[in-house]
Length: 142
Image 1: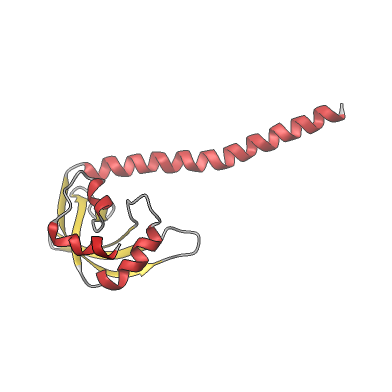
Image 2: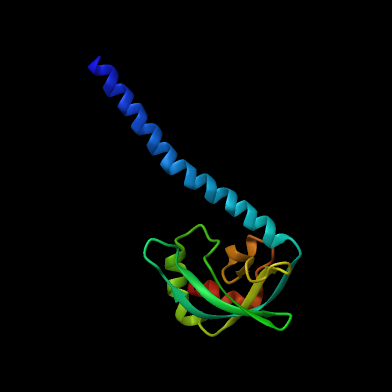
């Protein structure tokens, strides 16, 4: 009887642990798919300017940027598409990219919500775009 209770509680603990980790991962994955589909719907590219870098405790660090579309200014933030450690890549780059302009890929249907600044090669690869020669100086900094 005691052994059964221990087994039950171990299985219960394991199940709760798997659900506690699995559900947020699934929700994140589904949100990512939704975002990916939305940003590619009615897409366009414009130039945006990096104005800040922020690393918030327990959150992905982001570059903050602004861009204009149809006479309206949008402020946004973006993390890297790279498979490496984003914080390391952009922490190194931030001093060099602050105040500079880079392409911003966005959905014309909702530019303020669905947009992404393109800086490193992985950012361009995410949208099957060729990396421009004008940004090769970024590669030398990475």
